[in-house]
Length: 248
Image (cartoon, rainbow, N blue to C red; front, side):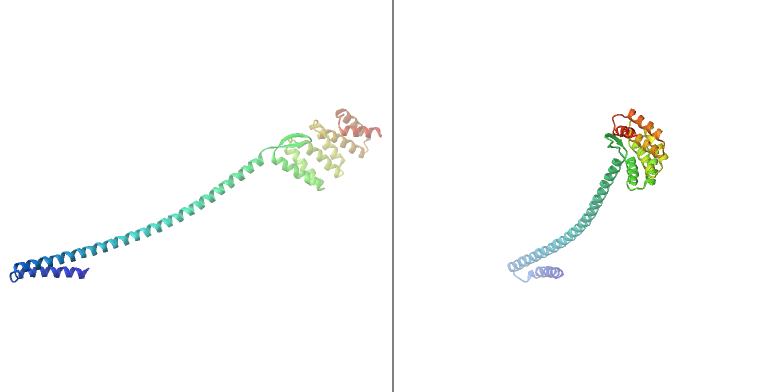
């Protein structure tokens, strides 16, 4: 660029010199020389301008490329942030869904459910179902003392439960299994008194008579069997009571 500028200045000086020497040369020759020199100056000026413009274009292009690179880097950075946010949103959404599912499961577990007890459908809360099942599991495993404690606690906590009559009945059986006939009689009498409409009531009276017989209270046993036949005539327990009375 500097070289071209010097050339242009030199040509301008030459032009001035030609004007100064115009008096020496012939007018036509001087005129032609001046025009030729002007043409060369204009050509060099155009070339210089073109090269300067080209350099400016290149500089502008380089600036645009640099800006583009910066923009792409910023886009890449933002894209990375967006991906991180999307991942966090997905994780949070999954956690929220899992939380809702867990809450729904817990709420459903607390809702009463329909169960069949001695041929009858009843509504039972999960808490009382769990307590009853745990007590009966102890009975099945032969832990009669533990079962008696658990069943007694169940009756006290859930007196209106659909399992209450059964719990009271099996409480009497747990006492009987522990060879405590007196406690067994008291427990079975509670079945007859508090749950007379329960299918377990007739069986409870039969168990009372069995305990009375073991305690040598034969007359009391006969009385209980007769009351059983009268109160629950169409039951298997009543048929057993008749057989026992007929054999005495």
